[in-house]
Image (cartoon, one colour):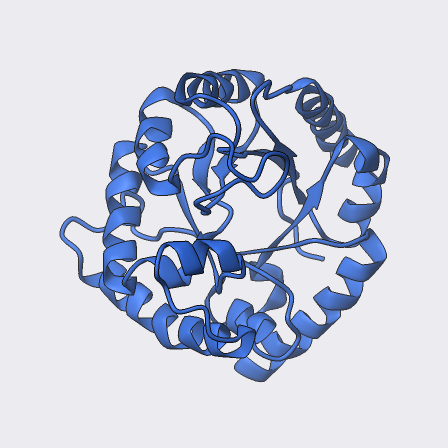
Length: 263
């Protein structure tokens, strides 16, 4: 499906490491030749020591934008609940300029209850958070269109994370340039078929949407299967404090060979 270039990325998870270890990991990943470098948008670690080191996503992205040179950057994904949509658009546009037009605006409806409760955001329900995202996405798009100056390349790519069949995938069909979700190649293909139907409903060519999935050292052998199902952007999580990029190096080597095989 589509003719998107095969891409690989890393999510440098801002947990357990020092700031300097995060920074070094971004630089090494950029030098390694990954296509994308992301962090995540949480306030506490998701694995390991629940009260370990952790840093805020968007402040880190300002530094990431400065110390990297070639990879696209972003947060996988920004939580819609944590920032006013107009502010989020302005922050994203500013990061786009700091990075020289390399910013991807990743966004999702949010899910990590501890973040919400301790930072005094209303947690509500999953359905309610999705409706908030549906309400706020048009505001983000409108604000991006009104900012002076606008995004460096005129259009800033938007990535939407999640695979809820009724609301999330409908929003992907309406707004996303990139769709990211998790699952086996077969599960992802089934979710992709639902997205195709939403695209038909809104009059959008499904091939316009780049499809992205998570991969790890244990599932690297499935990389070709993801591509066969139309998922051409594979992103690997890398956690602190050691930020071992060995498996990411293997992923880059796979990408280079896969691109050659495609001709």
